[in-house]
Amino acid sequence: MKLDSVPLEISGISQTEVELELEDSNDLNLTPAIALSVQPVIADSPQKQQSVLVVFGTTFVTIFLAEIGDKTQLSTLLMSAQSHSPWVVFIGSAAALITTSLLGVLLGSWIANRLSPKTVEKSAGVMLLVISIMLFWDVFTSH
Image (cartoon, rainbow, N blue to C red; front, side, top):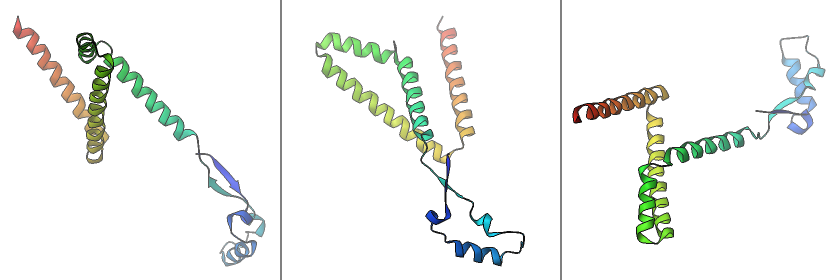
């Protein structure tokens, strides 16, 4: 965060109040000149806006690349070709993807409020490992 300085006059503290506080202080070496120092004020920072853009961009690119050529895109392509109504298929598939994304975000938020990030990370790793083992088992037993 960026810290800006504001003179005492603007901050609402009078010089007299500061001098009284200094007289009550146990440290006799303090002078009223110290009271003229500035107070930090937290200013709005573009850092939060950048982080929102970074999160949005990362999410968009990750999901976009993950969805290219997957079964959802192929199903949408086939439905569009069969129905001859590409805009209706687009609206239906977009609504479905938004709904599944909403469910994922809500479920993720719910889990994040109840479990530590380490637990979520380990659980995701274990689930992916179990799915991988099940897929390998299916490949080896089907031949």
